[in-house]
Image (cartoon, rainbow, N blue to C red; front, side, top):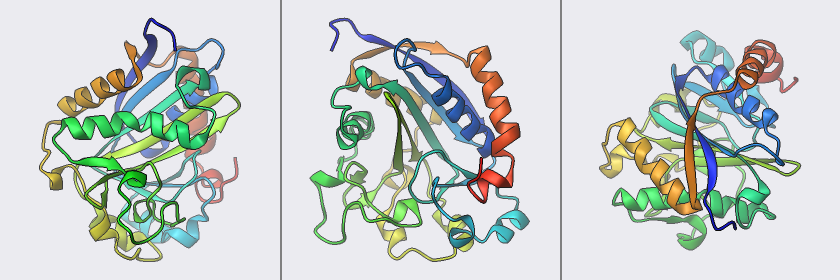
Length: 271
């Protein structure tokens, strides 16, 4: 790594609707040049609450879409894989960087461990006894088992407090670019999500936890500061606060209009 800290863009878009959030994430990914662009850490929220489907999920098999429509809950499809997530009362992050910007990036597992390291550090700074799932396997169940509902399964570098999972993360590679986003649950809204799922995941209530349930009740702006500082320290970077560039904003608007506000992508996975 370079002796001087690598500058990263820090973008805080605040809470957006689900389709807009996914359009911004994809615009940042598509606009990124691994040879020249500064890497990005984006922070955001979801307003109103929404479901996001993994890229390869069959929407009708996972969610009662008619019930979602009747309840006014948006359903969007991510560009990353994994299971469906209900986004409500959470802080969400996304990362766009080149492999050269992080150590251990040649392997997916190595990149996950590196990029999720800031979460582990932040949770520990908040007074939680947090660890990677691979380092605290509870001895029952399997790590990496595919589940329709993201929070029902545990990947190796998911964060556990005790044996309960805090949030979830997903990653995608596009040539030399690494994209990752994930959720940091502020409050437990699982009971609101379960009625919309086709199948009730076994043990999910006992296996997941939010920050509020763990006694962390800091205002979201202060929590952002904790996670940003943990990221800075964990990866040895400096931040330049930034908004979207004109080109990124225009691409996000186009993706929103042509992709994320349409059933072709969100329901059927067709561009």
